[in-house]
Length: 473
Ligand code: ARG
Image (tube, rainbow, N blue to C red; front, top):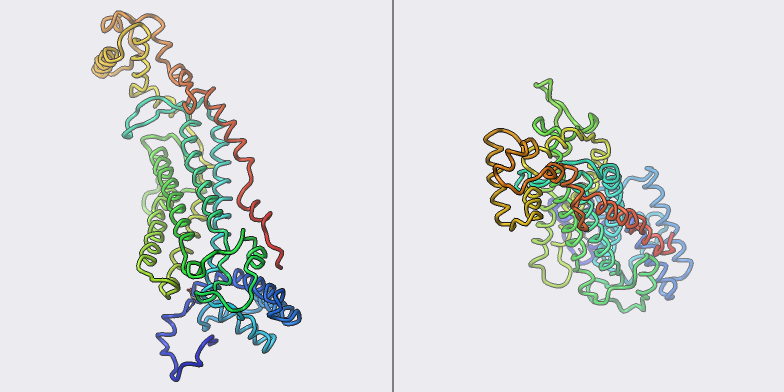
């Protein structure tokens, strides 16, 4: 087992202590970031004359070889090493000899792991942004095709007023758009480089931190070495944003589960995204939607875990911070999987437009419009509200709907009703008249859809990252 320390010790570490302390089991996924950070570090060291050009070339050559061999499977990461940093350094020394021992000049594992974790998280932020964008594309396509697909809008899960499928989906478009904005905010705040902070107090070598930061596509270096090695705010922010993504997905899943139920039948989830029952042959269950809803818990858990880990840590680095990884990695993987599967499920889901419209017709979703009709005929709103309340009660007694009553029945409740009431409370009118910006009326909706299309043409974090990409190999 490769160990980076030991000079000061007279006894071997107890095996269980070694295993408990080791992190390679989970930080092996920082391998590429560790190599990238090390190449940037030695490139800077050579530029500053701290290493010779030859030494730098030898180290870079060695590091690239390790990367190539691990990537093509000819070299396995040695799980007896303490962590990924030890593995890379030990490998390097094995390959290029004593020059390899100069890699860690002017660096500590504290700024090294802070850098690796930041590079890794930055990539995850960009990948999550990309997946959110794909989901938004899917949502927008459904919106474009369903500007006139009527369905009931709910409050308290009781039918309230008619809306359209485009409008309902638009609410989710807004949520996932905000999620993307959170990704951008996090990226902007986190994109500073901690390398060069040393263990906690910088180094005595003349490092050029601006240069190594630029090499890795950061805006610049961080400005306080103690904070640099002990800051995990960006990760907390990311986990918080991921929790919000999951909360949105979970709400959407809950609706899809309801819509897919035998009672509603608004949608049919594609066979590819459904599962059967081992005992009940008729079943086709919305397991993917349920699992996404269920996995929300573990992502919230990762956020709580890291917030709790960080709350009592004095400056600067403490080993507690190694606990920033496992739950965070799990949350990152979980959200990416959920976004991918959810997008596929939504893309292939079929809508039962007839069922949606029929449902929107029932349940007095046009009662507000009937009251507004009376207001337009000069009745004060409060009186109109009470008249329509009585009208609804009358309809419930006769098991019918407002538009199914005869004009004389309507007039027995209010003499203000005239022939034009039928058009005023038709589903089409109820929706089309809602023209305020942000409302389901088709004109208002088309305007918003146009803005959404424009928005999706904008650059992604991946675009921004590749423009800023450093020039290290
Ligand atoms: N495995 C450690 C971590 O994840 C790396 C940093 C170790 N630093 C130290 N001073 N022991 O935090």
